[in-house]
Length: 250
Length: 326
Ligand SMILES: Nc1ncnc2c1ncn2[C@@H]1O[C@H](COP(=O)(O)OP(=O)(O)OP(=O)(O)O)[C@@H](O)[C@H]1O
Ligand SMILES: [Mg+2]
Image (cartoon, rainbow over all chains, first blue to last red; front, side, top):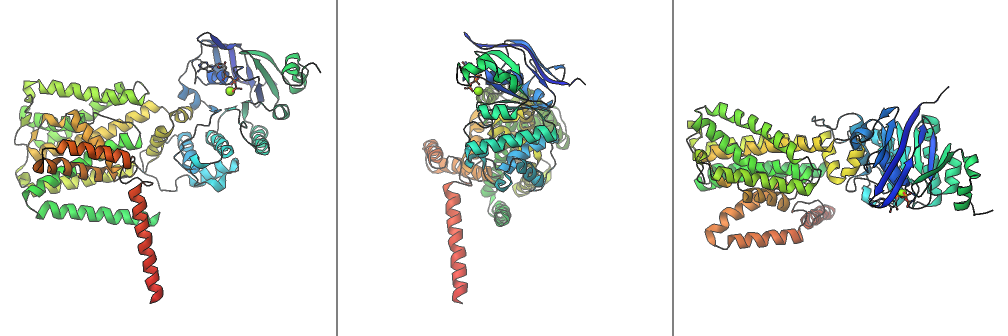
C-alpha cells in the first residue's frame, strides 16, 4: 500500500543577498518515517527546515503538508496544522518553570489559549508532569527553565513541542552540545516516538553514528543542494558521503 | 506559597481598611487625595495588563483614561443623557474604539513600534482635543454630572473605592486564566509562541482591549469625582506617569502597580506644595528607582523582598527561640 506523504517540498530556494543558502531542494517525507538531514556546516539544513515552517520566507518553491499547499502560510497557522519544529537554539520561556513551559503548550493544544475562566494553581499539572516524564524530566517540574543544564533545556524544548502532539516533528540538531550518552538517550526517546507512537520525524544531525542508527531515510545536503536521499545502507555507498564523512577515498 | 498568599490577603484587607479610614474620617482634602490615589491605582492596574503581563510598553494609555472622562461629560452635557446611560455608552464605545485602534497598532509584531505608536496616537488625540472648541479646548469640560448623593466627597470616594475593588478583583481573576499564562508566554518568547501555533497579534489585541476597558472605567470615575473632563487626562505625561507607577511598584506582582500609584500620586500632589523643585525630585526618584530597583519595589527577587524575607525569618526564629526558653 502507498504510504501517505507527510511533507513535500518542490524546488525550494532561498537567497540571503548573494548567498544561495538553499537551492532547488525537493524533499519528501512519508508518514511514519524517520528521516535525517545531514551535511557540512553551512550546507543550508537549518535554513531548509525554517523554509518549511516559514520561519524564514522562501525565495521560490512550494511546500506541501499532507497534500495541502502551505507555501507562504503564516507560521502560527502552519504550527496549528501539526507541523512543529524544535529549534537548534532552544526556544523556551526562560523565566518560567518547566511545568509552566509545558503548560502553555498544553493550553494551546486544548484550544484554551483565549480561555478567560480562572483555573486553579495546579491546572494541568499532572498532564505537564506526564509530558515531562516522556523526556525523563519529571523531577524538574518546578525548576526554572533558565537554570537547567544545556541538555535538559534541549529535552524541555522537545517536551514543549511534543505536548502539542505534532503530526510531523522537525528536530534541528536535538543532540548538539549534549554529552554523548545523553544524546543517545534523547535519540532513543525520539526513535520510540517514531516506532511506538507513529510520529513522522525529520531531524538534522551531525553525529554519523546517530544518523545511521536512527533513520529510515537519509538526505544529504551540500552547498544548499540536496545531493542524495536514500536508505542508510545505500547512503553509505554514496561517493559524496564517503568523501565528506567516512574517511575520504577509502 | 500558602503563607505568602495569606500575607498578601492580610495586607490587601489592611490597605483597603486604611483607605476607608483615611478617605472617610480625615477631612475633605484627604478624601479628595485618596479618591485620586484609588483611581490612579485602578488606572495603573489596567495598564499593567499590557506592561507587566504582556510585556508591551505603552506610552499612550492616558488616551482611554482621558476619553473615558470626556465621554461621560459629552454624553451628559452635550447630548443631555442621564449618567446611568452615559457611563455604559462611554465604556462600550471606547472599548470598541480600542479594538480598532489596537488592531491597527498591533500590525507590526515589534514591541518598540507598539510603544511609539501608542505614544503617537495619544499625542494626536490630545492635540485634537486641545484645539477643538466643542470639547472646551485646553480647559476641557465641566458640568454637574453627579447625582445628588455623590456631592458629598465621602460618598463619592466610597463609590470609587467600591468600583475599583470590583475591577481589581476581576483583573486579579484574569491573572489566573489560561489566557494570562499564554500572555506571559508571549512576553517571554514570541518565537516559541508563534511556533506553538498561537496567533500573537490576536492574543495581544485581547489584552489591549481588556486593559483599555479598565482604563476607561478609571477615567469615568475621574469624571464623576471632578464633575469635569480635563485635557491633562489625555496628556502623554499622564500616560508616562502611569508607566512610572507600574515600573516603580513592579509589574511582576499583581498589587505592585497599586503601590506605585500610591507613591507617584503622593509625590506628584504633595511635593509641589512644599517646593518648586518637585519635577526634579521626581526625576531623580525615577532614576534611582531604575538603578536600584530595576524590577520595581515588589519584585519577588528584588532587594525589598529579600529584606522582608530576612526580617520575617528573624522574627520567626526569635519566636521559636522564645518558645524554647519558655
Ligand atoms: N539570516 C541569514 N542571513 C544571511 N545568511 C544566512 C542567514 N541564515 C543562514 N545564512 C547562510 O546560509 C547558509 C546556510 O546556513 P544554515 O544555518 O542553514 O546551515 P546549516 O546547514 O544549518 O549549518 P550548521 O550545521 O552549522 O547548523 C550559511 O552560509 C549561512 O551563513
Ligand atoms: Mg543548522
